[in-house]
Image (cartoon, rainbow, N blue to C red):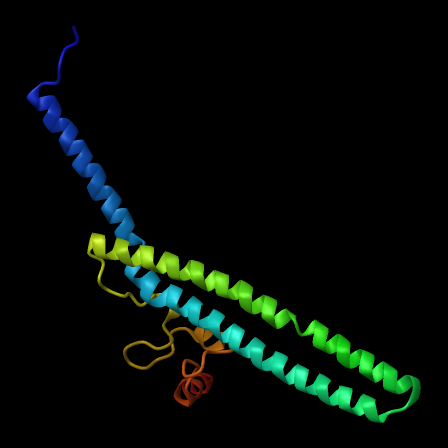
Length: 176
């Protein structure tokens, strides 16, 4: 017959389990799930929504131009009229990229929402309630000095999220 665990052995095992849980919790906290959900994933979702909106707008303009081209084609006789009509049709067909792109991006947004929900639950479970500002994303310090010129150059911005004129003026003033 085997020998059972003594009280000291059980206590040691429980301490090891509690230490493991504490380390796991610390590691999960260091991931900053609250920051990831409220900041990073939300930003990615907004950026993807902006891609869809801009793609829809561009596709609409392209189709309007193709429609005008088709109308002109009706007024032109002979082979040039046929060529214009063919080009108009090809432009309409090529514009289907927008629908496909929109569908694919929508699938990615759905996945991001699912990840966001899971990370929110994790943040709640481990008591992560603070959204941290990442140092490398800050543009200005507490005194208004530019600390990250690179952050001012990040291409197209979401409506209302781009650099303000004050940001641009501060960057230009830093070169004086």
